[in-house]
Length: 217
Image (cartoon, rainbow, N blue to C red; front, side, top):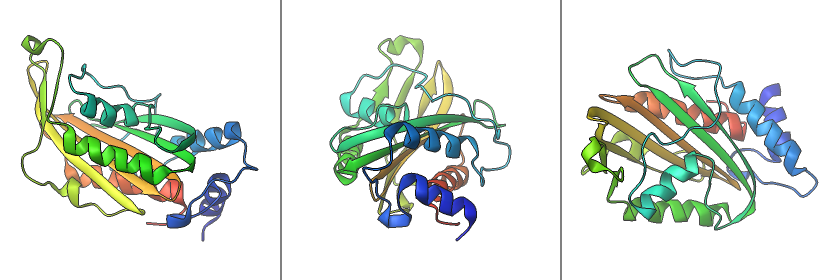
């Protein structure tokens, strides 16, 4: 195991599917380490800036509670079905038109699987995302057919979907992916004008998961 992986395992108190949080790791130290790992993320797809910015925010208002739950998880408001300890976020800008990715990593003292299940329920219940003023030309809906994002298998469990439609009148595509590994919950969004490349979404999800679990890709 690499030195970086060992550091990550020590900070998050575990590796891979056995990732766990121990009481002798302070919340402040844990949050700082998660932020550090997100700032130095190997394996980003070509064209993504290696200098992330603060956490991601949805570029539209949400008209559905389930949909809001999904994007809240990426925006730094993870589900609290389990015993949430801390979380940290980052945003990465890509070189394609309107392309960016958001990552949120939440750690739990217990019950990360319950929060992951809550996101799965939200995925099932989210019918469409729409700004409160639909006349403004912003409407996104879940894809009718399974996409490559749905088929990812990472950590102890993976869930995801694709949303497509229009943002302020322009074609817009968004992928969301959620990964549970032990007591760590990772939330990813990848969006772009026109079409977001699912291969880049997969690479992002794998890079963040590998970084946070200490597992080499």
